[in-house]
Image (tube, rainbow, N blue to C red):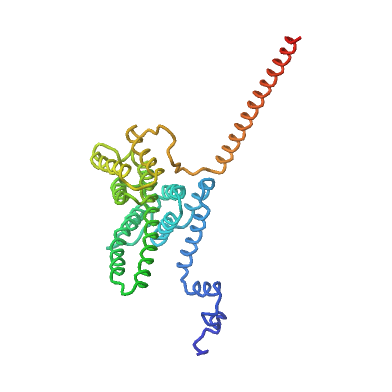
Length: 336
């Protein structure tokens, strides 16, 4: 057995289960070709950029992204996959805004691949992005089929314990699928806002979100999506569809078993449309992330306002005290 080992490689002398993570990683790297190592290095650098991506650092990190050698189809597909992975797992719309803006910067990236009959095919980042959007959206349809299988397993469970276990599996799968779906819809909405997607996929998202009248997470995501895209969707040729959407939202407000807070959010959407998509006041959400400089500026402004309020309050108190002193003096004089 010792003869079969690579004596020149000291890592090969240790059994796999006894190796550290670093040793296993080194062994895997040794088995890669030079091209695979370079591709892996590109992915690691791009992942580091995504980890650091903030509004404050966006321009510098976007420039670093464009300097990466994303010059093969594998690398182009890999960076698109990593953007979606981050966009779907991160909570809140602010991350979707940052990743969508990064996609706009990368939209013109393209690579050439060998085609049939000696022709060259050009594959763009934009095309890969559209394909990924459709794939992620189709996952929801596939999950509906998987869910039916899990529901059937619950019905056919032989014992109460087996039925309970199947229910727990279904609940966990539902949570994961809903989070992935809502993250995808948020990201798609931001891409549409940047004119990178057509209206068709947005209409599909709205229909999916309107399926449930009680799922508050989906309905809140619906409100966010319509606030972001409604003005561009509410055009003459799509008016019958948008009328159906808003009639459904009105029904949910009146009959849906949802919280009072969510009813106000949905009512804001109705008011927004009736006011021709001009907000009467600041909407319930602010999807644009702030830079550190903006936060510091707002903090300084609030501190200045507080100082002014304190100064005004003190001035008013001094005025009242002087008035009281004069009244007292006047009263004494009258008494005399």
